[in-house]
Length: 579
Image (cartoon, rainbow, N blue to C red; front, side, top):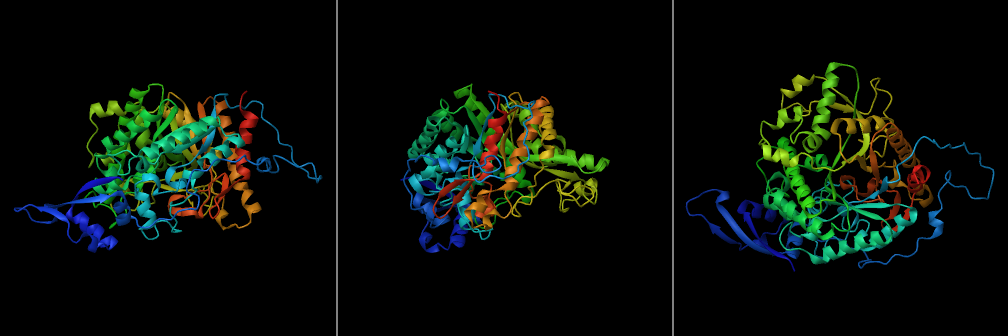
């Protein structure tokens, strides 16, 4: 049983009393009051809560699945490993006329190129209260905040990966997948984010790693994929406070110390541009802060860079042979017209997206120009010591690169935007679109309506890869650590056969990997890819209504089925991987 003493402001206690309608259970809090101070900040309360209490107060009841012990894998039926047409045609019936598919003999993936699939703890594990896991911010967001997830889905069960991981690893191995990148659940290992360690969680991840190795699958680990322990958010504002840095460092120390001999490739934090953009959180559900809403993502990013750098150096001290990197995201920025304003807009876009974390980590230890001009008005400058600590802290350039965008200046002009804090595009002061300048043709085929940011823009992948290499010059090369496509309207399909043929996603993977082959032939050092995702899962705010998986999951029975895209993905390596 985990327990912890909370030192919280009386205002914070009143907040969860009001929001959770639990005043009766806190009618007699133990409190100490300053005799000479006034206002709510003078009141501090000490309340002892068990982990079960913490779940009940902030999350409430959670769902479970009938399979609640670790499942041993069964052999993958050979019938499920037969590729779909046009990769494979049965001998009968005959009569199909198929265009000749030629191989480009000048293309090849280097023999040490790694390819695999990725998944994230809260999106796939389920078993959210099992074996000592503490709640994360996403347990509150999915359970308590109305319509934060448009489908009102939760991660309570998800893909039940916590119990069915052996089956999942066996399946990807049978398909020919060589790498599995998964994330650890911080609040499973440290239920309150700090303090007592949950040994059951460590033993679980021991077996996940060992199962990968048993099947010849290389495990890669991401320490943080958005599921911040709730207690840290409610204690001091999570990533908005520098207090997060030593807590993340201690979590990293536990993970590196436990698994450095079995896991070679590590990612510290996944897509900070996205998870820092979640701030400010919905009011009345988390600790309040005085930081203005528009500034909160940048406070988050500041502490992310410090936490990442500290974890990187710690990991290297434990085992200097480890590959440790930060995972970036964004997309190629295409100047929509040849105007000078659009050229400036493109650079602003790089500075506020990839450059936000890439420039400090790979180039200078500090922010790029346009971002620095904004954040210097409220964030403390990095000290020279901090800059030196941050610079050089990624062994590869890991990018979750799904798509691209056309970039142009705001209709009002850039200067009018930067001088007006009420401008809808402030502080970024650039605009994006998926349409060419004729306002008619899109950049490529669209994904599901639930992902309006995603179009197939694979024509721009070679240019994007060149830009990454030329701009940030990563010493260990570039890895596309997530890429994938949401098949349009897939969640509305009810017929299994129609679900398993996913033509938009299949074309995306073929075209994207061909684009990487072009870049490789042109001298770009791309070292690996990870398809998103291992199977259909909880796609955050879109719930289960948007599907990215190369496997279909029946969420009622938890049965898994390979989609056509899984075979198209693997076939590209069967065809082009150097022997």
